[in-house]
Length: 343
Image (tube, rainbow, N blue to C red):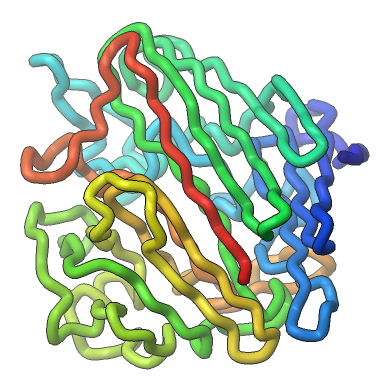
């Protein structure tokens, strides 16, 4: 493990980059600003290192951005309709930061805060955050650890462990944008994608789920057989029109078990990625609204230059009784794991 200064945040906080490399030459870099994945260098088919995640050069850029590059999202990832929910008979009001709805818990993002480095090993880092009662509008004091681990099997493992002193909502995720040809290589539409999901959750025009769980059969949302990300992304289909392309939650077939749910393969680098999780859903966002976003190394990220696999509970779950619950009971452990494996 190596460390180096990442400079000061916009609030003047000193930030650090932590670098870990496995025996195969795969490297991950994580910063304590936002518990953010800054870089992930994976050997391509010729053995050359390829940075497969989008990002910024400075913590100030991360702090000013709403893209979520590499971010740890909490207390609740994704959208909450009308920025409110009712828990144990009490209604809680949240920030309306997305067309009158709540997105990624509002304005005071976890990804824009300094996290405390709790522990490091030769291949992992654990970062901690204390979220007091009422933080972002959520009930309960919530203490959470996020651990990034790089293994000699070329896995990036992300473990979330937390506990609240009152019943609350917890639905955390990582918001990395992947481009397996390299973050500077252009569109991901020629990546090939497979996903073990028989259904998705349609939304209204503001991307709030309607409560329907719709089979993917016969729709552009079907990835049960491998196909290019770009093949159907601009199809004349209401869900894609609303999202400007893929920006939806799929209902995974893992039944709460930890298993492989996604495969992604690049057309140029030869890099392939598998996603494993115990969570019931994944929000796939294909970077539809990136527009000349100034990123790492002077690169300007354009539309669909990265794709996110945000493993999580379904969006707006707290307002739909038929969706898997994202309620975290007082004193009970919040614990979940997602692995991105490169093969």
